[in-house]
Length: 170
Image (cartoon, rainbow, N blue to C red; front, top):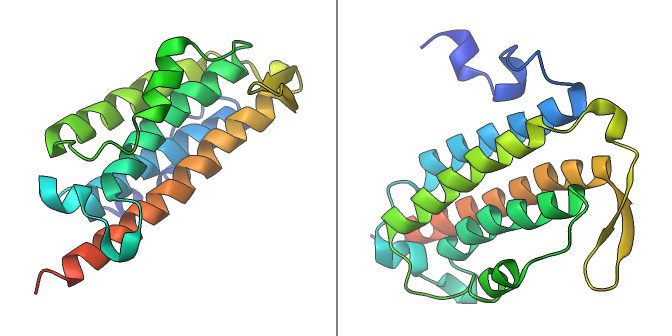
């Protein structure tokens, strides 16, 4: 494997046609896909839905990553959440997801998210936005950065839970 392929996405010299902040977010989403595949891709349906020590299951984190990207980008685009997005939020802890459904939803959300992120111009990052029913103040840039850090936070939780589940196999 080449050194460039082993490096994390942000060190591969890719996406140079994208402004720095959106590029960093896109790299974080690429890394999320790679890490989830590496550390959670081998889990069975039951393992993905397991709740070791009462932790949220890996399935929750994968769904939450996919759906939160959609919600956060809606706010960045100046929209509030739709009824469908709110319904999807309340269903994130449903415990009957299959591996194929989870990974398909995540892959589709990451691809759609990447397309949406590419549409933001660097000169719009300071535009004000509002989040949630309380209409909390932020900016386009703040929301884009939060897409990256929130995604990575849940990837880490999914990986940790996956490691606990695997350790309990034996």
